[in-house]
Length: 77
Image (cartoon, rainbow, N blue to C red; front, top):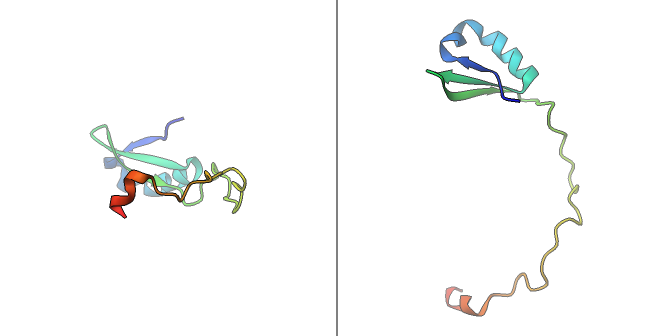
């Protein structure tokens, strides 16, 4: 689903309405001559779940030789 788009010429008369729409929809794209130039975004987007520290624990694995420099890299150390 794409964000609603509004031409900049409409902004002065519709700021309150557009901010309310952005709060509901997540974002509003502002356009000039049909080209996207800016966005009004919600500070509290309900489309994203809250972050949980440690939720990726156990999903990242490092190689046993992760910190060993390759032989041809010694000139750069």
